[in-house]
Length: 85
Image (tube, rainbow, N blue to C red):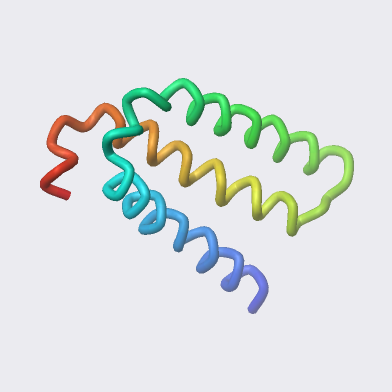
């Protein structure tokens, strides 16, 4: 039970980190949008592969964290009012 809560808390920290990185690197978001999409896609495929084959939860947690941060970066790359964040 404690491990599930801990995993949830760790993944929840990906959201503020993603927004912080998007705010700090706002000039690179537009140019790097395709790379963020590629990173997110690779992470999703990696998560699916690890779930099916190995069940390595530390690697899955790492890939999920990276996927969340990169998807927030993709999302914030479309935001025109990013400077007011």
